[in-house]
Image (cartoon, rainbow, N blue to C red; front, side, top):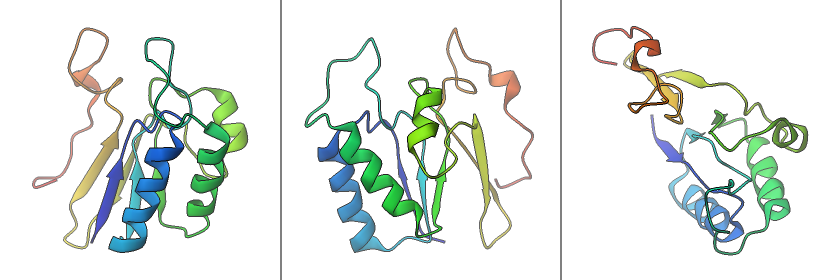
Length: 129
């Protein structure tokens, strides 16, 4: 199973277009987006070529392929789900690869290490996952 995993586009049309180019070239089975898709957040500077509406159009077109899996990052808000044509507000998602391994996908702000995160919430996964 071939995956492309991307995170933290933060509304950058430049990086979203680069991602689409890689997807076209690599032709993955799934594209996994690990959050922070449209908004740059209050702590971050505006990213290169900040154009969330262009990013929305690119990601919604990608969603038509049926290969897209997305989770929310710490910068997602309800309004993001209102403009995106695919689910993006779950804290995590799982994929099962052809060998039966579970791939646990998350942004890291809920399940990652750090003072605001909880590694205790990471689910038990089958051996080899």
